[in-house]
Amino acid sequence: MIEPPSPWIVKYAPLIPKNGRVLDLACGNGRHAIWLAKQGYQVDALDRDAQALANMARMDNINALIVDLEAGDWPDSGLRYDGIIVSRYLYRPLLARLAELLYPGGILIYETFMAGNERYGKPSNPDFLLLPNELLETYSPLLSIIAFEQGEVKTPRLAVMQRICAKKNS
Picture 1 (cartoon, rainbow, N blue to C red):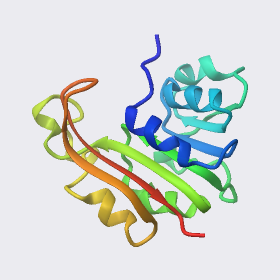
Picture 2 (tube, helix red, strand yellow):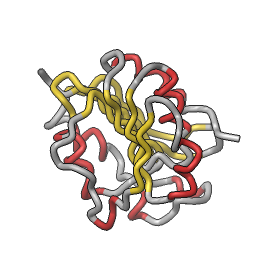
Picture 3 (tube, rainbow, N blue to C red):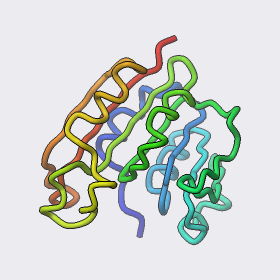
Picture 4 (cartoon, helix red, strand yellow):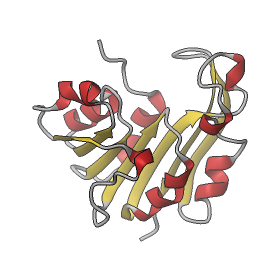
């Protein structure tokens, strides 16, 4: 069974232009890609795990792509998106690049674990944990910040998370 979409993403997804093209980066089993596709968005669901992508292969509005982002395997540098979703994934070399992939008016919705999460389990490696305010400091020079929060969350499990929603200026 697929976990329900993140409340943070559900809350801010309506800011993405209707029926727009959305990138779900490191989508895993597709909990956000599937939900977004059902909302009418055209979704590029990227992940390196072919088995995780298999359940989306024939779904309407989803283009499931096997991509190893950390190996530099990027499908097309000319692609642009109305929205980009990232949940529970961090690969710092891509952070600034995401802002470039947005169309003017496009929305970035990003959430992942941050320092302090090691108290509650994985991820615990600092390479996979944001520093305090890292998303805010990364995106505030590039995008207009709509919402930002960080700290301990209790659901779906106890964790320390950082979240941002930002818009590319027209």
